[in-house]
Image (cartoon, rainbow, N blue to C red; front, side, top):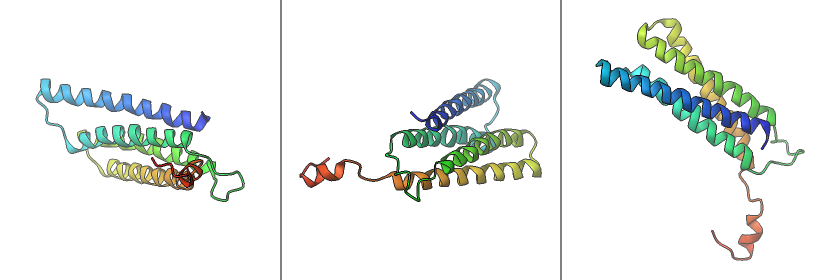
Length: 151
């Protein structure tokens, strides 16, 4: 497994822990403290799990398993997958932190941080799937299908 795929997977697990911890905190506050869960707190929890864990896990596994393009393929740009990680990870962390903090004291700076985090997430996800798209191809299945084999 390539080091970048490992980084995606370990980051995904880290966001899973953050999402679970945030979920437990929200559950305890709601059930034992009588506090209503705000939309911002719910958004932070959702982004930790869906973008931070699920999407990073999907990206890491795809980078690991999908056939790599030939080195001379002009679409093969591994640095874009690294840049995607550098967008998704801090973007998701910023989004989570700013959403939680804005639940206590909303202000313009936190709203700008939430938007910036969301833009980083969207950019990173677009980049990672841009990198993955040319890797979605028949590696050996074309020959098997030509012989009549079906999935």
